[in-house]
Image (tube, rainbow, N blue to C red; front, side, top):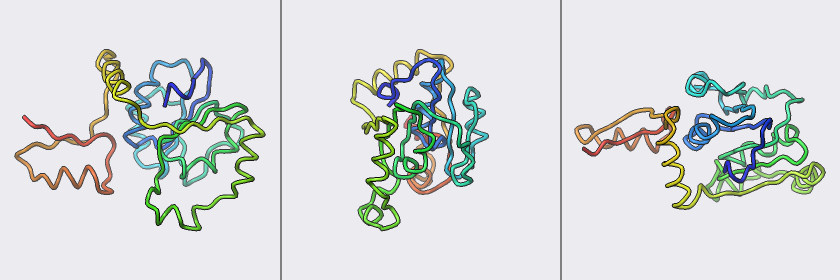
Amino acid sequence: MIKKADIKDGDNVLVTSVTSNTSLIILNFLRDRNCTIYGLSYSGEDKDKVKELFPFIHTIYNFKDNNLPKDLLFNAVLDPFADTHIVALQPNLNFEARYVTCGMFNQSSRKIKSKASYTNLPLFIGTLISKNIQIKANCLGTTEDLEKGLKLLSENVNSSIPIDSFYNKDEDINLFLDKSFLKTKKTGKVSFLYN
């Protein structure tokens, strides 16, 4: 995602859903970039924890409170959940901004077909065209991307993958599964130690 965002020195970069695992990894790779990093949290919960992990983030805004300044323009947006943010963020996209996304929050066919998810497509596209915005859909990467990313993380002493909690074989496996896959509050990865 970072590669496709073509981040340049001095850019304003927004990372959405800052407590998601995808965004936490993205933030690790933005640590040493010469740009201004902003965050966006849907609920505002745990944003202090993220700011503590990544003190280089200029400001973390709260999506629900709609407190993103109208005059703050982004050159690049890295967004794991485009259906949640892209329409609302249009006014904050700079001319020729790059918007890179790797997924949607409402992935089920029932939610996608819901009338609440509809937007005025001609108006939306017209706005993107008038500002020459690039939208780039991106899978999370190839095996080579994963291997390269893990190598870069292991070589940089300042990088770390935030871990929310550890479980092991002596504990009930359901605790690990519930924390990993249900809507349980967590910031970072939930890990299972197999030794």
